[in-house]
Amino acid sequence: MTPIRFLFCFLVVLISPAFAAESPAKPNIIVILVDDMGFSDIGCYGSEIHTPNLDALAAKGLRFTQFYNTARCCPTRASLMTGLYPHQAGMGGMTRDSGLDGYRGDLNNQCVTLAEVLRTAGYATYMTGKWHLTKFTHDNTPPEHQLNWPLQRGFDHYFGILAGAADYFHPKTLTHDNTQLPEPKDGFYTTDAFVGNALQFIDDTPKDRPFFLCLAFNAPHYPLQAPPEDIAKYRGKYKIGWDKLRTQRHAKQVDLGIVDKSWVISPRPENIPAWDSLTPEEQDRFDQIMAVYAACVDHVDQAVGRLVEALKQRGELDNTLILFLSDNGGNAETGPNAKMVGNPPGSAGSQVACGESWANVENTPFRRYKHFVHEGGVSTPLIAFWPDGIKAQGELRTQPGHVIDIMATCVDLSGAKYPTEFKGKSIQPMEGRSLLPAFANQPIDRDAIYWEHEGNAAIRVGDWKLVRYHRDGAWELYDLKIDRTELHDLAAQQPERVKELAAKWEAWAKRAKVEPSPADGGKKKKKKAGAGKAAADDGGGGSNQRTQGGCRLASRI
Ligand SMILES: [Ca+2]
Image 1 (tube, protein in one colour):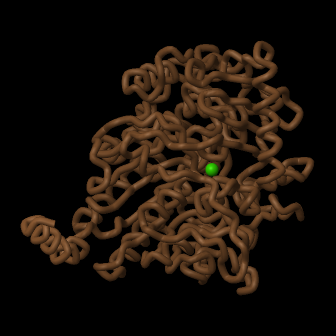
Image 2: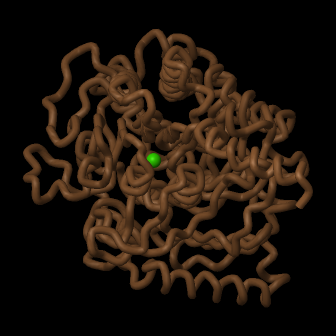
Image 3: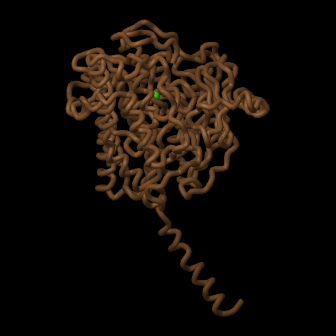
């Protein structure tokens, strides 16, 4: 070795510890989850709804155009939290225990949560908002039934609703850490309270400690409720009608590059009436319903703005990864005629739901809705913002991804080790892939993505998607590269490919506890009950059961 080279090596050895000391701090991680919001509902994905704060995150970060959830509230939360397919975590259905491994209605002990994993890497762990990962949510739940409450699943602090839906102004199941709270008095609004409490938790974090926050809004889930001034902003704007609005959103999506212009926009389903066929009174009613929905989304955006500003003030913004996504597609459960009960609609105690006619706009340009695993049910926006870690600004990412990937991403970012054993129990290997390569616009190496919910099933390998509508539906085959709106079924033309993908799905279903499955997919029987009961368990299984105002019924959505 020459003297100069020796000196260089000596200096490197000397300097290295200094480099190590100055290596970037672990980023804070914030996952913002919204509830029942469709693919096209924020401005940077095509919406007319005013979402400047989310659009700003997208402008300084990335938007994924092919990111997926599991089509339903509990299963998406289970996948997000554990990095597993929902059935593997015991949540293939909702919060009913069917007695089958994949459908226990509670997280099992062969999985770990993001909080349990990130805690091992030194993270403070917080959750505010909708939990919906346990069947035990009732008043005075005894400690032995609180095993799957947030604090017992790795979170340092929690503030939110344990159940699947709630009145935004006077929610039941409101809980702080392990203490169930009385119904709040006037002046409370879930969206604001979830952000306010999150900021309090962040403020109490030592400055040298990274934090993980899951901020899970109940908005815009039924019963839709929002402050009157937000609703007033949108009242009258939806008299444009669903036919024109869907076309308008689609045009904006094409313009933004969110969807490929060669994909034909899916047509209005037969059971949704043409907007122009409605009476002025019917149009006014539907305008009011969508104005409340838009107000809920608008208020989420305002809350995100408050969070971002607070992080900036605290000097935490640039080294925080913020992911924003929805747990399932737009919700058509109340059928084409929607629901609007209470006066004024959108106030405390009122029951407003968009129904199929507006859900079809929410999921532009795709087919079908929440519950179903066609693209309308499982496609979500995903914004990824992290100034210190993502160099690209305002770019799109077309790599397919799924909520199972968030665990792998967090492990990758934090340096945490995903365990093979936890609290004496063997832990299933995570199913997802880290999104970090996609942040740098590299491919994500993966074999396939799978779905199953209530018998609706799908598999995606590359650009090929095999999808089934209900348990007894025929497999449909689509080439998503040229037909992501799933309008040209190629199953009859390519039986070998159908056979191969179906066999692959069947093998996964056996491996991932999808089978054995309850005959009804684990869903609760629809009760004829007031909205309070239905709201408490997130509604039923997607059947349209009522008609109002003369609109046609759908037998099944
Ligand atoms: Ca949901």
